[in-house]
Image 1 (cartoon, rainbow, N blue to C red):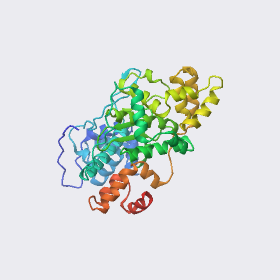
Image 2: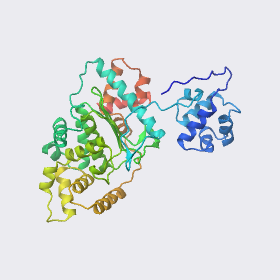
Image 3: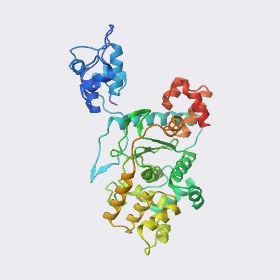
Image 4: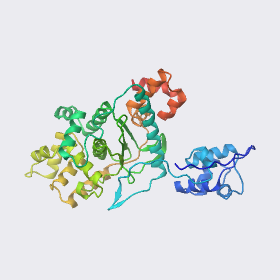
Length: 395
């Protein structure tokens, strides 16, 4: 983030905030002055926010803190003299048509900062313990044969016939694959909200996954707002990113073939992902042209233990389905899915939203007195009193 000067804070009980920062932060959320006012207090109206934006009046410190919370920015941002540029610099692999996308929502940026903070802490923690770089990160490149990369991923994560058989369903396969990636040294995090803010949803239209290629602490984030069946492919796609050492923000289109993707790296990772999950040779051997599409999909879902979504994609890749037929079937699958995330086991959410490896490392650091309880709670997105219960659940 570009350096910006901070205004002096008046000694009185008012906060000398910068009006244009309030306007910028409000508009970045797409909220009206009235909506922000309601979050500050019952007696506040849009006129109060307008006065602060125009700097006709200054808010009391307690209200300025509530204002920062409502705007989802650090309190100190209110005193900057210039609008900050986002400080998150990651490769953006997304495209719409053949045009690159270069804008991020506030929700994505806040979540990405949160992820990179967790990753940085974990990397420093394990580096002090002498952890060596992981050999598979950047082992290949986009010129490598797709089959070789996919075979290496399957070997590293132990994706064998027995691995598939153990999974009773494709949901089990996804869970087991995430656990195997964790065991290999990858921080696996999945969530549909920003941090622990259940009302700040992440958009599937904006991105489906994110990979940060780091030899010590590689990280994969899966957008939990996406259908669970689609998450299987996204996970394999992000694994491919790590194996070629090229991280970034991804949004693989479930209705496109790999060859439809204009970004070279995304196109390559799509091909690798499909080959990891459903090897081409085995797929073509199992697919029977003499039976219906429904029967083939039913059989192959159970054989490969992946979702119907993945089988349909591979069938489309190998001309077993027309584009029109494929898109219709994907739309049916998407219609079944309801993206709303609510409730659930809090402690399971804490683990999934942080990666088990990270959560256990934070708990170990507490025991070693290398991190304070407050900092540990911040890293895990919970309150200090719940850390003990979390420790019990995760062990």
